[in-house]
Amino acid sequence: MNRQAQAAVLFLVGAAVLHAGLTDLYLRYVKAGLRPLLLAAGVVLIMAAVATVWYERRGRGEADDGDGHGHGHVHREPRVAWLLVLPLLALILVSPPALGSYSAMHAGTALQAPLAYPSLPATDPLPLGVVDYAGRAAYDHGRTLAHRRVEVTGFVALAKDGTPYLVRMALNCCAADAQPVKIGLTGHIPPVLQPDTWLQVTGTYTAKQTKDPVNDGRIPFLDVTTAKPVPTPHDPYDESWNN
Image (cartoon, rainbow, N blue to C red; front, top):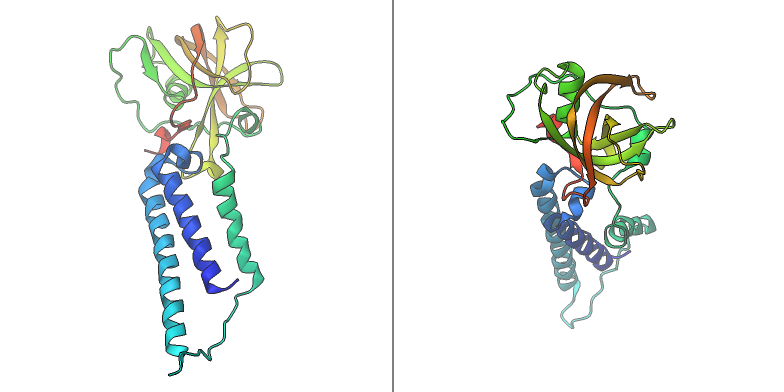
């Protein structure tokens, strides 16, 4: 790989990173708050590509003699440098789906006791994230949820015994560290549930809980009154637990 090839690969990788950052594609890889850093990285890669071309041409010009014939030698980098093409192909050719039920059921719930329980608006039904509902139901014993109808959205995962869960994958930084937070569903559950289907469920707090078979973490339940399929949300991950 010569310098021109390096510059071309750097430019294309930078352009692909910028494309991901300027569209919703980046949400498949990192949390929404990292978008500025992702865009900055794309710009830096493109600038590095331009600088590589400029220095290469400048070096060739200085190597030319008075007759315009260059006596410099072309230095090639190790062939391993072509591995830089792999992330480029991944960005251009592969659009990975968000992590779903398979990952959720092979990892223990990441639910932790909340530091506080902020007051809730008087909206009916009350829209809550999976993490928020699960934390209040499991550790506050539903005190802030009593006599409230709540509306929660997540994707379906099925336990080995057939128990349906409503799940969101919670992010710290990127999809590589995503961990599931699970809510068990009871009550008026649709007769047929397909894993990875996104559902918006409305229901009420129930004291029922179970233990996650993977890590013995707490999994609270929601008593469902209605459930309907919904499209995959703009951002399929939940970042509320580390905001």
